[in-house]
Image 1 (spheres, one colour):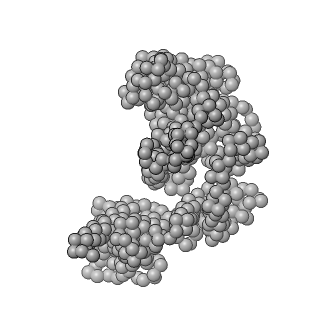
Image 2 (tube, one colour):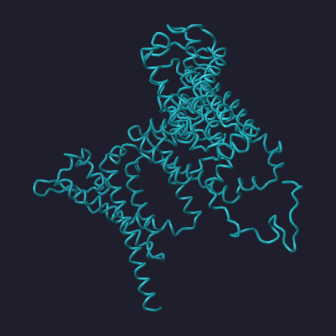
Image 3 (cartoon, one colour):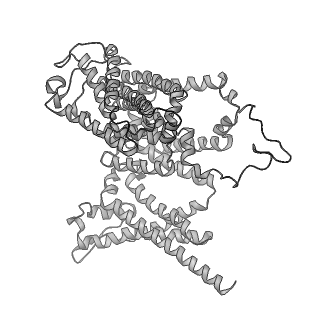
Length: 603
């Protein structure tokens, strides 16, 4: 090896070790942050595994493991260097907490960081684990085990580095197992409550779940399920095998009917197995899935970013309220089913009335204009101008349920809204699917891709946009009507920009243009925060935001995107012409040994 190459190798190694130190500093800062803002202390009372580990402890442990995992990829080449770099990064993450334990009592950080208390220092110093009493020096109390976070950080960092050296399948299985335990530990109480009310499952619930966290049998069961599912995925590869089947076989009744029957049974029985607030959450998910499918036509197919969706939502809700309410502002006392068509038609008329002046606008300007419409309707709903008609801030009360049933009936409460939403979801999904495959749907897609080219091909942009806008408005009105029936009232505070933002987010997270993706997006966007409300209420939006960032980082095309959406965001992954093309004889191009493929055969 020449002197130049040795110098280059040395410089490269020094740069790598510098990256390791930077990772350690960053994760040390992260450990201090989650500790001092109160996350660790707050979650110390929330068990993941009963009497074994709490969520607060798990956060600190995962911080050190994450430091080692990231540092292993920055360390110089070689397994020894990877483990050493991971241990250094883990030590630095833990040492930041050790330094906090030493400095905190002297400076008294509680003047500007209220969570920096002696109890917090004892917690991160492992007083309960080690059983070592605090020591006093010059009137200050110091945990003797201040070294504990730094030492533990070395081991956890090395463990994180060791993960990177494991085979991919083992690494993925460990990550999935840990994630499943944390998830199930957070929601153990939610799962336990309905099981306790059923005599057949009460004993099982007490064995698997504590009132706060998992029991050891529950841990074993969850890990066993994760291992079994992953082994089935790896060994049998059912999804890949199914996609490899010919299209006729995929659609064969012997394949479609059992899968469809099982899925239908799960969907129909879903709200019946829960009590408390869960049925309301499920109904809300179905409602936003319904509205998401409506906006998916406007945004996913036509590419029109409509931030005034809440305006048509309000029109539908107030229309049903006025026509069905038995209270002060009711004008007809119609049945819900008779009022629904009028709500859709009125919302569609508003869509045409508001859309025609602005649909010549393109891009971000259209989004801003529609946002203005949403704010105008919201201000009118809260103002005194229409107070004598729609109640002003108080709104319209006493909106009856679509189906009057006695208490205790399976269709009582939010369950009937769930089933009504399901019916409308099926109808809208069918309409959206048929429109997507129609000439109008292809015009929408062409307009979404390039409006100038679409206009050059003879597509009337204003007319095509207006149709998409009116359909989106109609389905928004339908969603508003179901929303009013769900809560039995419509008040002005419910009409705000958050509704529009949530529906747009449902589409983007689920997969723009994808019908099943919108439904999955509603489960993620609406269901996840509501579940966090029950278990980690104070920090639910923090965890929710982290989940959104992770999805957008690893699935920018959405959780279940359409084929076109996936291709658009991963176009750079496709082989360019002349790069990695098919071998001679396997493409459609003619070769000396293989004639050009006929264009008249089966595609």
